[in-house]
Amino acid sequence: MSTENTYDVVIVGSGLGGLLSAVMLAKEGMKVCIIERDKQVGGCLQTFSEHKKVFDSCVHYIGGLGEGHTLWQIFKYAGIMDKLAIKSLDADGFDRIAFGDESTLYPQAIGNENFIEQLLPYFPNEKQSLQQYVKAIQQVGDHFPLYRLRNGDAGEKSAVSGWPLDTKLQDLVPNPLLRQVLTGNSLLYAGVAERTPFYLHALVLESYMHSTHKVLPGSSQIAKFLWQQLQAHGGIIHRNTEIKTLREEEGNITYAETKDGERFYGKHFIANIHPAELLKMLDTSVIRPAYRNRINGLEQTTSSFMLNLVLKPHTVPHRNYNIYWNATQNVWDAVNYKSGTWPANYAAFFTEDADNRGYAESISILSYMHYDEVKQWVDTHNMQGDEHERGGGYEHFKAQRAEKLLHKLCERLPEISGNILAYSAATPLTYRDYTRTPEGSLYGILKDVNKPNETTIATRTRIPNLLLTGQNVNLHGVLGVSITAIVTCAELIGMDYLLGKIKV
Image (cartoon, rainbow, N blue to C red):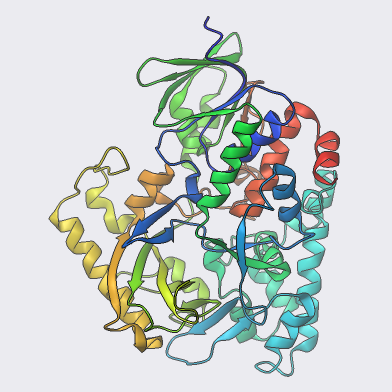
């Protein structure tokens, strides 16, 4: 066995979970390597350029990067917080919620009291409801110990994890329009009213209520600085290297083998990929057929269509907030839109022109799109380093949908019309190929409050030296994935020990 390709920890996938896990373990003196299929590291943190402008592929803004928050503390421990260039979004309305043809933009604001105060002009009789709501958001966070960087037990979470989002909101907020405003940015977690747990909504929103930032010039900076930290602690990333097999012998994984036959040996292995993709790699009888069937049968969150616009300089005023538009005053309709009613929602993210302050240089527009809409091209694949054309029919489909989405945005922001220099579009197939998630799922496995055990994936597996991390374990999002990385690493170095290091 070659010592050159022998490590303490081998990590498959360089998404945020894999990068953070690698840095935390390398800081403890472990010999760590990450094996990444693509040229660019970072998974959902990847960025790309269009007309020399930087666009985020998935992560357009982040909650919890303000000093003192859990995510700030984790990134500080990882050695990147002081390196990131971040810009705060509007404290009086980082997200603005819109419905149909109405001109009103309802604000969601930073700070518990400010969150309430900014909504009161629109709902003057709902102060008590808003106070109850904010208190419930805080309560959920307090019942998830790791969100407060403390060690706890499952009993704490169970006290709040069984609340369905729709019924809990009805208890807290009788006003139906206010409920829709509070969930108007449910695209952040691809919510399904009767299935999404209230805790998922609460934990996501709480981080944004604490602080909301854009990373400049794009979210790939997080991956870049984590990679630098990994190298500083002796770790390495093998890019353009695709794992074909994880070989199990006598109950443990012994090596990861690439498509080209190269082997990476390790004492421990961490999979930072979708569990369904992991199962395709596992050469083992330890994983039971029942587990394989369960994972492969799980429903994924919906996918999306993304339109990225490069704007003519000095033409479109910059918005230091995001716009979430819903076609109706029932935000839950969007995820189950019917054929012919697309787009049923969108989120618009603005980037300011550094050379023309006060004006936007680009806008990204994200809308739900069902995987079935692109089913006729599912056998085509197109990714960096392995480019393939999907055909004229696919390009026509993209152009047609781009025009529809742009038309819908121009109804609210007419100044965009005639001021677009260039654009690009991405479909569920784009996300499938670049993030390696089944059906191009936005956030991986759909969390179902009615099936908590079936839709919750543990970091441990039946193979003792194989652990999981990433958005399909615990929770998605930058904060959720960062906390999951702590859970994963704690299996190797101890939870109390690790939390003690992070909180210093």
